[in-house]
Image (cartoon, rainbow, N blue to C red; front, side):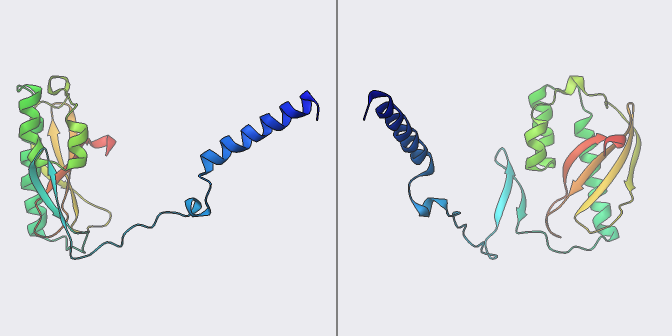
Length: 174
């Protein structure tokens, strides 16, 4: 074998070994890992900065009755009052809002600068935005503000769970 052929064999061998290192080298590594089967008897507490918010066991079917809508509307009023209180420091504003919102929304809301919010004052009271399909898990509540109509999207995991805001946004963006 000449030097040129030896270099090609060596380079090809190195490439094969490098690719084999990426592959893992065993057929077992090609198989998808198995995930544990969820135990329906197990639930967890969803929280936001150590403030318990809602027990989550999965979304059971819920009735969208008048009492649920009233409770969601009352909770949305608290959310909107906290949201539009832009006189507070960022930390105080978020600490007031955090127990009223979902952990998912809290991840975004922690970066909001209250002093930069357009909606600063509630002008008209709460009114429920009709849903295409009322399922008892979500209620959209509209407020008139100095910056136009805004919507608070209220959600709950179960009939006994508190209503929490999953978003606050202008009506046209909802």
